Amino acid sequence: MRIFEGKLTIRDERFCIVAARFNDALVQRLIDGALDCLRRHGADDSQLHLVRVPGAFELPLAVQRVAASRQYDGIVALGVVIRGATPHFDHVCAQAAAGLQRASLDSGLPVGFGLLTCDSIEQVIERAGTKAGNKGADAALSTIEMVKLLRQLDA
Image 1 (cartoon, helix red, strand yellow):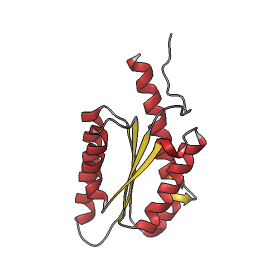
Image 2 (cartoon, helix red, strand yellow; image 1 turned 60 degrees about the horizontal axis):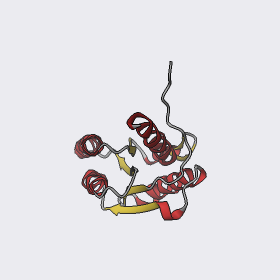
Image 3 (cartoon, helix red, strand yellow; image 1 turned 45 degrees about the vertical axis):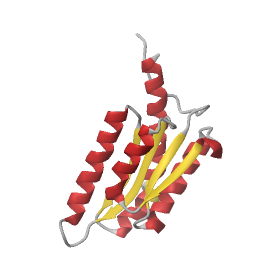
Image 4 (tube, one colour; image 1 turned 135 degrees about the horizontal axis):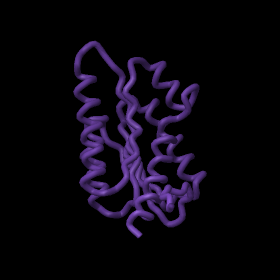
C-alpha cells in the first residue's frame, strides 16, 4: 500500500499570506505565527508575500486574485471576526468561509483557513498565541502540507 502525505519542508515553494486589517493588533499575532511557521519549515523571505485587505469579508476576493496570478503554491488567509450584538457576525463569517473555500476549489490551490470567528476578545487571544496555540501558524502548517500533498497526487 502506498500512502500519500504532505511533507512539512519548504524548498522552492512560494506562499502568500492574505490578512485583514480589521482587528489589526489581533490579526498581527496570526501573521507573526504564520510567518514563523513558514520560516521554520524552510521558507526565506523571498518566498513569502503579504497582502492586506480591509476586513474578513474582503479576504475571498483578494485570495481569488492572488491564486489567479499563479505566482504562489499556497495561500494563508488570516482574519479575526468577533461576535457583536447583531447578526452581522454570522453573515461575515459564513460568506468569508464560503468564499475562501470557493477560491481554493476554483483555483486548485491550497488556502489555509486562519479566520478566527470568536465570541470574545479573550477567545481570540487564546487562539492567537497563548493557551490554544497560534491559529495563524496552524493555517500555515496545513497550507504547507496540502501544497506538498497535491504535488505528490499530481505526479
